Image: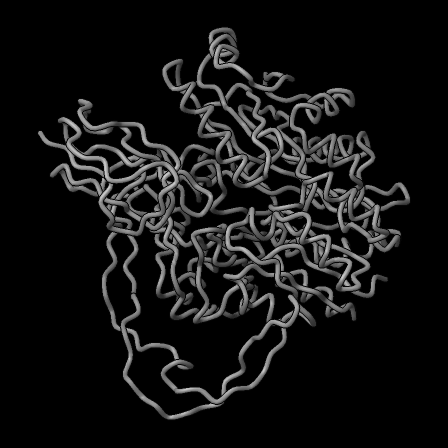
Length: 585
């Protein structure tokens, strides 16, 4: 077994891996950016090292510094989590070249399956086929135009070296091609460090079904069943469940067999997920994620198998202790991703800021995975996942009722969250009757009036009593905890008062309220300015594109008129309520 595992990640997944390591008696090493200096994953690890920087590029994607820390820490294993370096073959190879174990598949498998184009080709070699698409990178808008005219619209433009809906844009017609290419490349570069993109036919109303696979280095490959991830917004999952409901078991079995074929075909080892689109009784290969998935807990709940433990054991060279015949799917599990976003009647606006209160639910069949505690802060520079509420029931209706009960108990204050939208999804007839699809949340679910109603922090009292507080300090890039006596006001949480939070703006809509004053609906960075002073615009036209928490949000005109003022430029950082533009009627 490994002795010291460095977790090359942050937040919920870093906490998840650290806990699994501790249960196996493995020493843990955390890494952190300037903003994560006192984060939960840092506090739980046995030792922690500073990456420096704030943004992902400056910290968790800083290859040189990460490799230095791996050497300094004495780690003999590295777990990449998901996102960041988890599907980066060069990083995995650099680690193995150091004589350190990469807790994931071999670099060669990541290279084949991480490139979505070569992944399609690899799947086809073993008789598993996807939706119509290309096996060449997009280098010119003319390629997309030709493909759309030939195969039909809409077309999905996707990041070639990523997943999770990041860097994916759906193009309804020729007029949207150029903007979609630019946006997809920006998102892919920001999240995965590479901006290559490709395209495929976009199915109109499919279900998103995936298969969890696990393979050891002794030739054993098993499927841990299916998951349905069809409740999505912006091609990113909101709610996942296992097993995939409402699909004939024979079809699910065929999916599992197809997934194992794909894994064997690329000499895969460790945990991975093969994703499919299902529509009208047929399924199509989508991609393989060569890492642990965010939604892995639902597979754990219905199989009783700890996937992170298995990852660590497989990486240490152990053989799987069970076969396919030993795996039994029991009951039904649901995972609700709690994101720091205001549903804002379907706009889903990122909401960075401090979490003043976080109180997790409890009870039979209830689990809450998070990387935060009360007092921690959700940064605009990282993914906005606050936590994952996971429930198990003996059948799907029981799991849905348990999820609604647990959501009612879950308290998160200080930032807006997707909880109101999650409740609307779970209570809807479409979800309960399995008639929803991947585009249903955005195009079919009625979210009228569904907004965040919560609390925001206020300033506290001046109180100079001294109390003991443990503070983090950093010596030569390594983190230590020391005890200090500090004024109580600097150590205690500020008092809170109830206050309704409005959206403050809209993605795909303006915050001007019909008066031509266009303000930022959230904190973020301007990545594109699509209008200039003097331009004539119509209500709904994009004025600027604002990136927050790795998501791009089109901020649009709220009236017809002429641009009288543009207050920002590409690259500017803005806060919620900052003036972006003025339009005169």
